[in-house]
Every structure is written in structure tokens, then in C-alpha cells.
Length: 191
Image: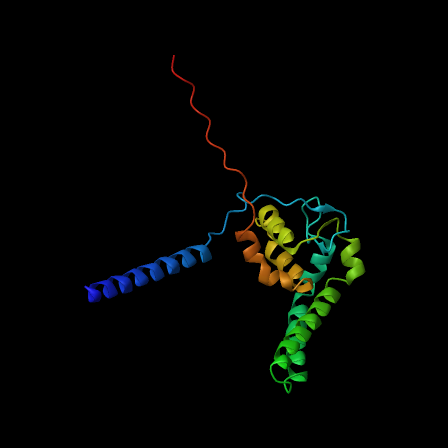
């Protein structure tokens, strides 16, 4: 009898583990909503928010995005140069050196991207929408502008000046509030 109980306990443990792994896998595989399903965050009118939108209120890319697109090659080269420079400068410092080198490279790349977009004064003066949250900015851009021909360039330009957006973008969209689902209208009753 003791052997049967042990086997049943092992089977139950395996079934429980498989169930837990299935739940974790399902949670990680949250489907990407369509732009129409996402609840649109409200932007701040003007440039008083922490993060500038790459699109103006009228739906066109901002002048700083246009400038950044023209300087895209220089920005990408600068980002890589900054990353390599930061890594080389701190490669002799164990553990923390790698982390600090990556951070220094990220900041150098950011400075180059800001310069390519015309500098902070130009970015601020040519922006008429902003956000206080990178997640709101990401969701807004996806829901409102993902069908625009310059969308990818606008996102890349924005990620250059706000490097943390790169890591947050997809998760922000997957976890964004959804528009309420409305039930279809009932057909009129037959008389």
C-alpha cells in the first residue's frame, strides 16, 4: 500500500508541475492586441511631459523625427561607437565594469541620437504632444500611428532619445488596457 501511495504522490507532483508550467507559458504568451483593441492613452497637449511624442497633434511626424531620419546612419554608427567606447573604457573592471560600460554606451548613443534630432531645445520646441510615461507613449504610438508609412522610423528615432522605450515597448502594448467589448445589437423581435 505504501508503494502505491508513493507512486500516486509522484504522479500528482508531476501533474501539478505540468499544470504550473502550462499556466506560466500561457501568461508569457499574452497575444499582441491589434491597434484597434487598445485603449488610447491621452497625451499631454504641449511639451510639458517627460517624453515627447514623435508625432504632432495633426498626425504628422515632428520636425525632429524628420531630422533624425535624415541622420539615421550617423545615429546608428554613433550608438555603436558609444557602446564600444563605453565597453572598452571599463573592460578592466570586473562585473560592474560590464554593466557600467553598457550604461555609458547607452548614454553616449542617446546623446548622439538627441544631437541627430536637432538637440533638446529643437525636440521640445517642435513637439506639441508629450507623455509622463514611456508605456503610455508606446501604446499611443502603436494604437494611433502604426499604419503610418514613417511609423518604424518614428519609433527608431524615439528609441534613440529614450533608449528604455526599446525594452518596454512590446510589454506596454501587451499589457495595455483594452477597449470595452460591446455586444452586438439584438435583432428586432419578429411581430
